[in-house]
Length: 228
Image (cartoon, rainbow, N blue to C red; front, side, top):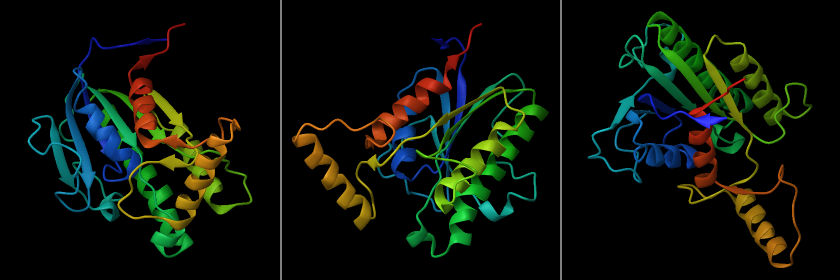
């Protein structure tokens, strides 16, 4: 694989105010071959870590519930022949969502409908399309457990879309500065740091990873081209 930097790309970030999404936005602003970064947000001014004066960054306030009624105009900046890259990093917890149905709406429906719209617009405008999905370790559409099951179902649906390139990342526990502290994740981080101190090596599938590293991997994968 080689990293293609010959073409300028227009990037779109779903979940831009989340732990991984913020890191993706900040990193994309420093990538020379990315001409613009559109961050989908519910409310303006949420990208605290990003430089609001950066000429490449646009916050686009969106209504996720309007996704089923295209055209939504989320990808209007794409032109024929462009290279569009969608980073899908939206997610919530059951506690934050309040119910399984609400978590399903955020983690599955919103991401899938956005991906479908991205596929529709890129096909209509004859633009090349890359989608990078931030999934989760253990994602499995046949899982008995709710969270890995919906993540696996989303992966299957995404892979069925008509896109030029699809990349999926399955990080385990995410490390980084969250706006809202989660007790379970804080305890898990403490246990991980203790395990590190006593010299135990965890398998990659369950080893915590910093959100910054996930973002770096997502951006690298987005611009890799498979050569036969």
